Length: 367
Image (cartoon, rainbow, N blue to C red):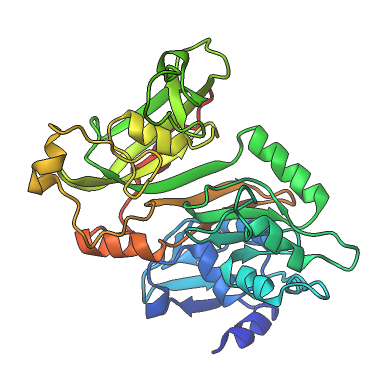
């Protein structure tokens, strides 16, 4: 049965049993429903799963349940919404931008969409930046000129989940959800070295630019510290802001590198990149916080600690997952796939992206 037929039958009022196909192996239950029955709203799906109407091989399931090829999924009678029309392209806009944005969509409904931002594409404009997500969103403005709006930011070289609101009201609602820390974010990174302990909490004050003791005297040559780089600061220092990140080693190739899962509790500029550097394990491919190795550092000369040339020197940082209350009810939970350069690194070292992620059990505390 094709997807269109499944969607029509879903409205027939009968209980059905569908079998998970081979190409759906490992897929989350919510993504599976979105693929099979795209007109099913997220709020209604949350309800039927929560009340036990959806069963996997006869047992209760959760939205986050990972399906296995050959399993049977009980699908109850469903209440379907009309599929949201793709956000229209504004007359005279850049059609290439519109197509590029549509190709990035991980999830979309009438109120918001979630993009899979690629490495190297800026979210907003800046010095020398002519193409960025914020500008590209002009291509999706409606007939009244209202355009989708950014809800949060990612660094240019960070890949993954980026949330976009389709209206001013939804943008305000989502902004409040982020400010009240109801949104939970999980990032994946590949870092140089292996942190000890394997799981921990990083709590530091961060500030931008050099501290007073780091200022270069006027009569001394040499480069100044990068004024845009965040540094560890002291409590009470001007502009210093508290930052908290939980991290966990998911897998490793000791002593060379580790795959980290990171949960930021606060949202400071470059927080994860600065925190990784602060614990002595900078993220691979980070030009700003990468390792500045001393001449006697064993990582310069020890071949067992060298990073193979096959590993691309692109930033290995992925905004993997975003979970938050949907402004219109239910829970929005979206996961981004590995970008090509991180997928190649995972394949090179045998990391399994389906492996259990221990950071999911980390608390969502406050500073």
